[in-house]
Image (cartoon, rainbow, N blue to C red):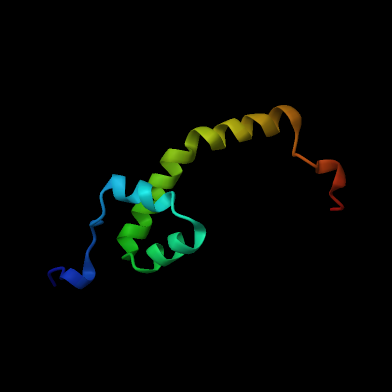
Length: 76
C-alpha cells in the first residue's frame, strides 16, 4: 500500500521550523505538538536531543564530580 498524505513518514517541517517550535512558550509548544504528525514529533525529539546534548553532558559531568544537587535532603 502506497503512503498517502495521511500517512507521511518524512517530517514536513524543516529544522528551522522545529527550532522555532522548541522556543515557544509552554502552552504554544503543546498546541504545536498536537498538530504534528508522529514523524514530525519524532524529528522534534531528535532535534531537541541534538540541541541539548552539550548541556546534558555538562550536567552529567557536574553530577559525577559533585553528586546530585540537594542529595543531602533525600529521604530515600
